[in-house]
Image (cartoon, rainbow, N blue to C red; front, side):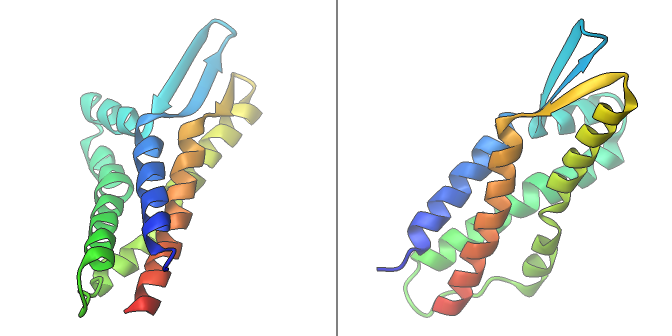
Length: 145
């Protein structure tokens, strides 16, 4: 039996948790604490007028990974011949860990600035796991085809 369904479930579950759970907790001046999820960050950027940045982060962090997972589900559960994952989506998935790197840079900057402290939250770990599991699932799906 192929591990593809289990890996695909884990990737999808991790992606869902990664976008709704808090990614980061920032504490400023020991009085104010903020926690932000990926969806909350995109919505906040949109509300504050940073719409191009919100759209860019939304596309690469939410839309493209969701489309890739959907296509992987279709490929995994369809009967042979399985539909191939488009090359353009495979190329875009190379950027999937960029979001994790950006959050890590924000945490590093907050910790070293002296003005705030930052800590990772479970959403970041789920999001990172989703990126790794999706890449592994994609490679396994290509090998099965």
